[in-house]
Length: 196
Image (cartoon, rainbow, N blue to C red; front, side):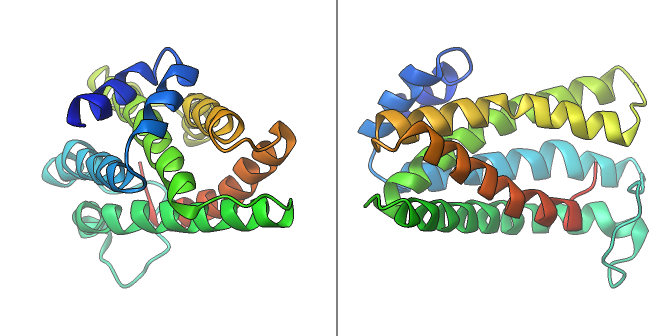
């Protein structure tokens, strides 16, 4: 099973349809739980911990005034897994609700599996992009950085919509509505807590 998991992760970068078929073979949602855990640990340890150690402070300033600005990245080292798991579970539940409104009976575990693996693939692309920008010492405007992140989320859109369509047999229009609804919930949560 571990090899299937790793294959789904790597194949997801260049063939979302093949990745979806591999994801469908994995027990739901256990491997997706691992996927979200890997993504959150990698982001915490490879992005936020080095930011804290380097003495950087977040820009724009965080909305949470109870955490000192100079320790906000340390806070994110521990809070990132909470945020990622929360967004994953809320997004899955919202997707399930949208499908129910569309009169589709789909199990929550299957939805969470597709969303979790899609999050790992797109999260890997985002983290590699962020690390490359930091290594090159580029200073991108925050708006451009956010737009580039949105574009890099292509993998998330491709894997989830393909998975909902092929594995769960959901019409494409309903799959697109579910993904848009998920982002309408997930992006504000991320904007509230997360900082680059």
